[in-house]
Amino acid sequence: MQGTVEGFSYGLVTPLVAYLMACLGGALGLRCTTRSMRVTRSWRPAWLALGSAAIGSGIWTMHFIAMMGFTIEHTPIRYDWLMTFASLAVAIVMVGVGIFIVGYRGARGTALFTGGTITGLGIASMHYLGMAGMRLDGQLTYNTFTVAVSVVIAMAAATAAVWAAGQVRGFLWSVGASLVMGLAVTGMHYTGMAALEVHLHGTADPSTGGSAAELLAPMLIGPLAFLLLAGVVVMFDPLMVTGRAAEVPVERKPGVPAHPEAPRTVCRPPHHPAHHARRPLVRRSRTPQNR
Image 1: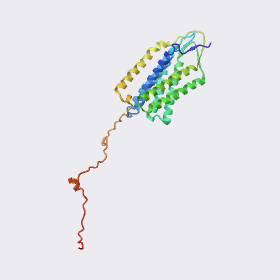
Image 2: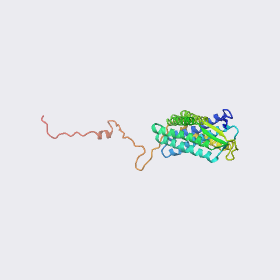
Image 3: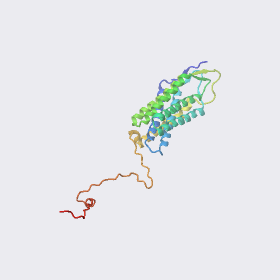
């Protein structure tokens, strides 16, 4: 029996909130990526790891907020906890690989293509792994072409967002990049949902897993943590707002001056003693001259 799928049970509330959560995670993550390009290499892994966790958590939060509005007629939906949180780990790890490539190699050329592609694949992997964690009295099937389109959307938009973050052009530029990242996540999500078909068995209700409402409480912790962290970063790191380049401190080594000075030419007045001391000596010939 074909199941009737409803993806907007609460109207536009769940899509809009989900998009905002994706933008929030993307904004924090991409700003951390931008910041990592202005610091010394010793601090770079910390900023990139924070950015990866923010983007991955934002993707995961967006997905399950959007799933709050997803219902199937004649059968309840449950979620496997292990599979659900495994999708979070996959999102953070795969997005982290892409972010680290861009953070160390730059947002251009092969590094940009590789990092953006892996980031987009991380978004798609999180989505379909999260869908695999659904437990219901039926079977899920997907249209291959629509799934491929959803993956291409994720990779293209993720690459554009990572490129924008790598330009280091200020706060407004990063806001635009986060909007693109949010569009990548939500666009990929609803395109993937359009590829879904449900075939109900009509035998019994699923007995394992938790409902979407039971997952809401842990999901709210992530956005609140993002808001708090974003506020702390903005207050204590004004470069995140102004977009100005940070001065990278010079590494001091024994015996090597931190700032070598160029030789300076000192101009002295003609009556200065040192001026007369440096006049070239003219040797006079002792040979008598004919008068």
